[in-house]
Image (cartoon, rainbow, N blue to C red):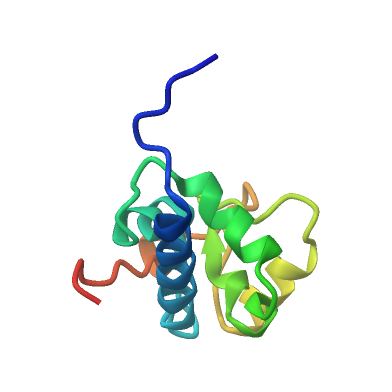
Length: 113
């Protein structure tokens, strides 16, 4: 069994969830950010996958602009074909490889939100 020194307590998990939802709610139209940026802003930089799980499994998260969260290469979420359509409707451009043009559209908020 692995030892995870950065494992979250239930209280920390709730605080992480709240921070993730707060950050995602602030992503401006026409911009994207990454799971990793959100995890770091929430205080857990080694937990970008948990950001995705939080957005997928938290009731009410669908009312947030979750479509504006992509991976560090600009890839959209697997199995969510509508994400690209939503992003394009906001003017976000994709490169020929199907990834978001991160140089044009990346939103990197201040470390203090």
